[in-house]
Amino acid sequence: MSMAAACHGHKIPRRRSAVMASSRPLMPPEARLRRRRGGTTRARTMTIRGFLRRLSPLLVLAAVVLGGLPAAAQPYLKFSLDGRIDSEAAPFLLALEQGYLKAEGVDVTIDPAVSPQETLTRVATGTYDLGLVDINELIKFRDQNPGAAVRAVFMVENRPTYAVLARRSRGIAGPKDLGGKRIAASTTDGSLVHLLLFARLNDVDRGRLRLDTVAVPVREPMLASGQVDAISASVLTVVDLKARGVPAEDVVVLPMADYGVELYGQAIVVSAKMASERSEAVRGFLRAVVKAMQETVRDPARAVEALSRRIDGQQRSRELERLEIAISANLVTPEVKADGFGAVDMARLTRAIDQLGLVHEFRTKPKAADVFDPTFLPPLPERLPR
Image (cartoon, rainbow, N blue to C red; front, side, top):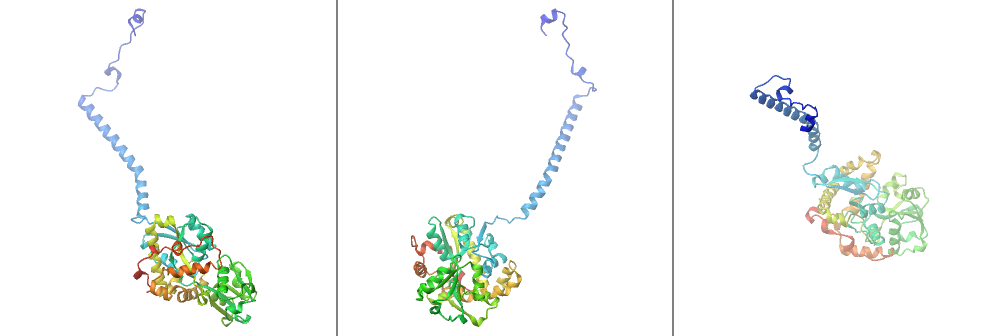
């Protein structure tokens, strides 16, 4: 307050001393210092204890989570089949079950598909990393979708399973007998294209073929019930026909590879993006597949065990029979014994593309190197059948 205020009768309040402001007894300076230090220490101790109480549950959770992880995170890959899970998927499921894929540092999921076209779309769009698909479907897909940078990197079926299956009782014993007969085929799995090529190479007049374009699920039942005389399908279909009660002696199997068809069969495909950005993961995947194929050839029953966990147990014996046919007829061929699993003869692939051009009108005819990339294959000694 100013002196002028004091002159007008206002009193200036006196400052209270430190002694007057405190009701506590006076303490020596040394005691006050010890008390402050003690209080600070206790406060600090309480703060640390509270922090540790809050932190300990997080430490426990982190230990549990980290303890369950591998030392190094494994690349995660999605692999698409081109149809349902059956004997053709056995080597891949065996690679998964036996830890061959994990040993190569990749974590893989294996899923079925509705059709080869779905598999190719999955890989082309990056929804899946790799796929199993008929290489001829890949060739046609690339031709119809020029921007789809997808190539095959491993040939699974050196000899395709394509075949005409007919009823002997309908007077069919060879290709020439198909004229005038009713034959069922599908556009979904490529069997119609295969049939037309088979007919052309064997001088069967296409105009005399009575073709029924049908869905895959009804094709075999139509032959079994006698609705058609023959079907274009797979050599493995003979097992399904037997299961449907068709007498074995009434089934004629005409493997197309025995009648001039040089096409390859199923292959592992990958997108260009996947091949460039995750090349080591692709190589590791293929090394694991080779080991699984070698094991499948040595012990088909063991491969079917991996398969049987994902199918009806009653189908086990049927799938084993299908797998044994595929091994002897399609997977282990003279070419595979010489060149190993996964490889292709580029000259043969060129001829196969030429053959496909007889029944498919290319926008731009591809070269073999556009379709197949051998650079991801393991060395030859590692790929030979054992």
